[in-house]
Amino acid sequence: ASADAGDGDDGVEVDLTTRTIPIIRDEPDDPLDALGALGGMTLVDLDDHRVAKDPSQSGPYAAIPRTTTLGMSASRTMTPEPALPPRTTTPPVRPTTAPLYTPPSRARTMTPRPLHGPSLDATLAAIEHAASSEDATDAAMWFLAQRFHHAVWFAIHEGVALGERGHGEGLTPEVIHAITVPLAAPSILQLAHDTRSLATALPAGTIQDRLTRTLGTPDAATAVPIEVDGEVAYVLAVGDASHTPDHAIVELAQLAHALGAAYDRLSSAP
Image 1 (cartoon, rainbow, N blue to C red):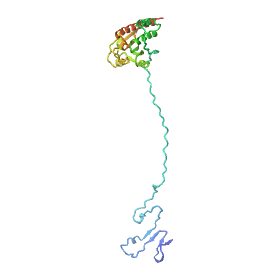
Image 2 (cartoon, one colour):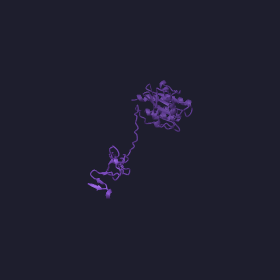
Image 3 (cartoon, rainbow, N blue to C red):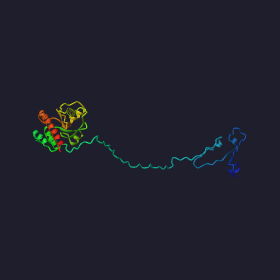
Image 4 (cartoon, rainbow, N blue to C red):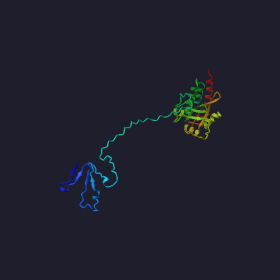
């Protein structure tokens, strides 16, 4: 098959089977006619989007294979990220620490300050005739409430003085129960316990500093032991006396002696 490329005598026939177009030259022997040296040209297919040069027409390189490229105008489908689960906040759990020992029963802790308390003689008589150790202690603490601004009753338990009851500014039951004084550390309680006698000296040390603040930072502090069955079972610590300090210390010693005698009597009673 062939096709006529023009009208008249100047037409050029194209062989569609070989797709070759012959080149017609006016001067066939012209050495400067570079186009004539080719002898003919070959038809190539053109696409609708891009015209690529056929390297076979100008050099020995093979045609580069065409790959499909996504244009910038192509639509993009965005995949949404999965939704995060709702965050729940759980408050931290505070660890609890078990006490090192089980404190004795503390039913009565606060002794009210009386406007007009009993005299020493009346108090000593009440202690002597008390029907229980609790009654004897109540009578003593009632008397101390009118004589001293601060007073704390300590029970001795395995080498530690435990706050049991008392009175004074800031000495709530919780504060009193939290007081623990190791007798191995220097303090006025240690002196009274170890010497088994009334103590007024304040040793230097952290434990004594805390104890002094507990007693209201007094100008003079006093501690007296109370013996039961030959052992120091309790220690009374007081701060400043409300009046006549020297006389108050004498009264404190008499009170401690009466309490020890009452406890011995009650512990041996059937």
